[in-house]
Length: 228
Image (cartoon, rainbow, N blue to C red; front, top):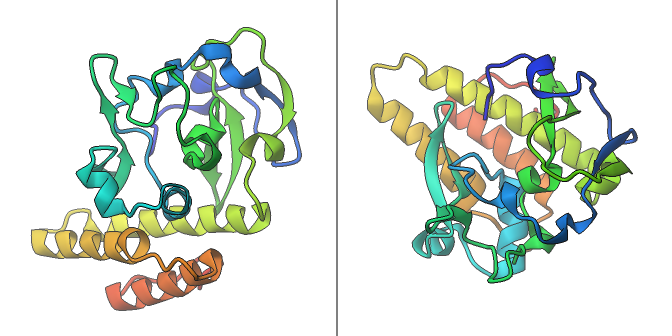
């Protein structure tokens, strides 16, 4: 999800790589779950998030949509799934009665990042520390790679770059389209290829690369990124 603000407005002004230290460790949050409430539709899932949740919960995207745990919304021209906020507190549907995350081991990338964000530029990205978002007063320094806690981080980083570029290209393709059917069909194909049709036994990154190539070819999108 794009934010049309300057980096200086929302961060400490620095950019970090996976091997850098950043003051983000909240020490288990000590019972706080403020960042799990009132988030609207901003916790958007990418295909790797969906893969982790499917493996962790044993449920498909369709099942999670039917249960009201996930929703579909338009994000920068693309229809994508996000965590649903429910109840008077507008809390994440995966919070338990104690206010703790029920899917912490396989939580989405946006949740793993917080209070960090990603700053994309020139086909790559680095991380930034959001200011005024996390209320913890005792945060300590932690290596970014440890905080993200995701295996095969080189492949994960490349995947995020390719996914970001693909979404940009889809957004560009549907922008200004007078044919609403084209935009709808392209978005449905995006959802089907990358969220609904996930083979349990497949190597995720290899499968993703093949899907990107096929999707771009079928949609007539120019090929760019490591997946091409």
